[in-house]
Length: 382
Image (cartoon, rainbow, N blue to C red; front, top):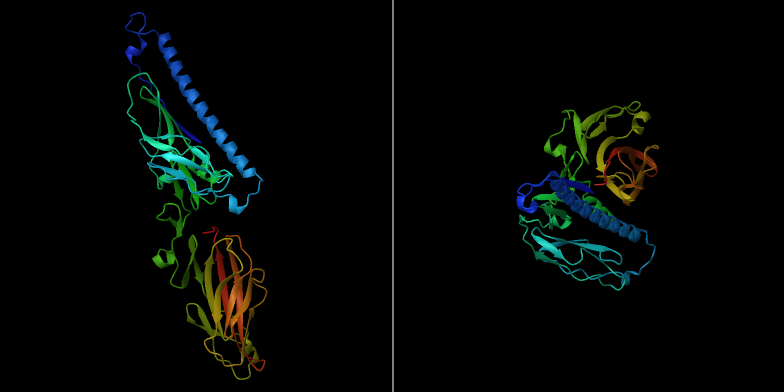
């Protein structure tokens, strides 16, 4: 809870007259200040007690082990609140909704209602009554509620302020913490920052805030050409950033390769009878991709197929032991195989795996084709 205290006291001479005197003694002024201090302290103590009681109720609800059947735990959606908002989207037994009035209106009735096992809401339906928030110059203290503007007023808990002779003492609710305790999911996709009477959502570097002011969207530095990759490098967009990758043709015994595209190397013709050269891959392709952290598995990442088949069979498999704990290759058709992520991976991480496609004719190898896959796992789940 954040407390913002603004304290200014103005004295009116007509409030401190005694025995016909025009000026008050120091003791009278001190007594008046002590009365104001007691009033503010009592208000703050009362509000803190209410907040502790709310947190205690939330803790009891979360720790409850009572099981309810799905068919009998839903309450009907609460009626809309005119000139106000309702905070809460879960209408199951034990869950709460909170009622908030717009600026210039005061809540009449309960601030919170609970969904009961009887499929009804506790308490009476509240309403918002228009109030005049003009500060008077008399000695009476007024308590008012106001809400600051935010990205979504439905999630703003109004501040509570007490006004006395132009002085105010305001206490603000932490919307980020309140939403975390009372709702499934997140108020902000990444970080929720509480402000006086409101909140703001922030995204990590490499992301932009969505139009809803709560979601985060990856910035494609490669498409925007805001990367720092050289002309000899390949720009690979990742979730939250980018990578500059250098693609070089590998070396095999008695075989040489030429780069035919930014992501492909083809073998030069072999000398007749050079078996070592013929056993080397006919072509080597490079494939880069980015995934979010803890992606659900199993998930097909991409498919690999042959443009034309000269032999009578194709075989797909992983080359060597790289990535075997994270990936598997499955046949998806006569000429198609697919790379499957078999278990979730916590980011940030970089995974490498080589896929081999072998073309056979009567069990005799006609050619090998290799695809080198690099997977960049984001540190974020979005």
